[in-house]
Structures are given as structure tokens and as C-alpha cells.
Length: 195
Ligand code: MN
Image (tube, rainbow, N blue to C red; front, side, top):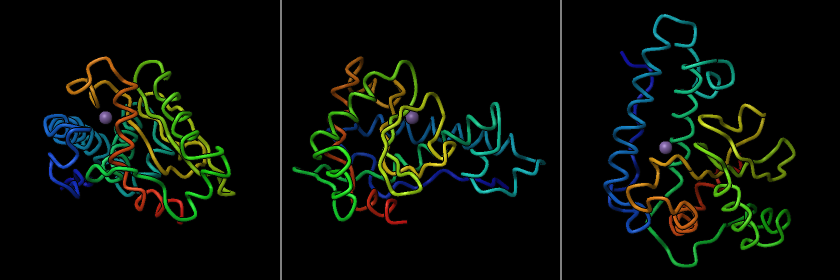
């Protein structure tokens, strides 16, 4: 029996339109993420990793097992942080205060975050994470890497692999990243910060 399963999205495939199309969700969640799940389940079969939590596999595995586990962890955090587009969508609670304190303003944070995603060469992810003291940090992670490998708590992530945006935005990665602010569910992100 498969150890890891494809997450169920808490919204319909077309719920994020026009920011992310139903077609992109169909391929990204239904094909790419499903592939990582299938690959990881095959890789861990009969190994001690079968008994481990996903984040622990990411911290301890290497090679293809690490790549597939990392991509599952990354995509689960990614897909579950979104909801229907909303105007003037902003952080909430103590996370909002922490963003203002660390970056000066939400707008300054958005600019720095998008810049980090736009300048990441090749495939990867841009992250907002918290360190062990609750301090916020933006990092670029290549390929399947996740901030848990650096001891950070991941809060928010934008996927900059081309499969995340090419059907809808082609080469216009910055346009895609700027549009994603409309669909971030800040209650979910705040919940990760509160843990
Ligand atoms: Mn992806």
C-alpha cells in the first residue's frame, strides 16, 4: 500500500482563475505532483524511510529519494496556501506585524520576494521562512530543496519551475509571481508562523 498520497486540493481546479488556470492545476497537481508521489513510494519501499515522516525524509535522504520527497513537501505547502482571488489580499495577525518589522512594509516584502523568485536561475522555489527565533527570512532554493534542510520553518512559497506557469504566462515569470499575491490565503500562512 502506498505510504504517501496525493493531497486533495481544498478548492476546485478552476477556483484560482484567472491567476492560475484549471489546466495548469490539472497538470501541476494531477500529473507532476502525482509523479513525485509515485516515485517516492517506489523509492522508499522496503527501506527504513518507509517509517519516516515526509519532512524527516527531506532532512535525511539523498539523490532521487530526496528530490521526490522535497518536491512533495514543497508542493503540499504550495497548493494548500492558496484560495479564491481576493482584492487587497494582505497578511494577518502577528505575521503581518513581523513582515512590517523585518521588511519595512508588506509592499517592500512583496517586491523583495518577487525579485528573489524572478532572479532564481533555472528551476526552484522562493520561500518566506521563520528561523528558530521567529525572525523572517527570504531564501531561494534550487530544484527540490526545502528550507527545513536549513533548520527553518517554511511559511510561504512560490514555485518557479516552468511547469508552474508556462501554460498561462509562457516566459513571463515575474507577471506570474506578481499575480500570485491575489490568491495567497494568509490565514494558512499565519497558521504556519504560529506553530
Ligand atoms: Mn511545481
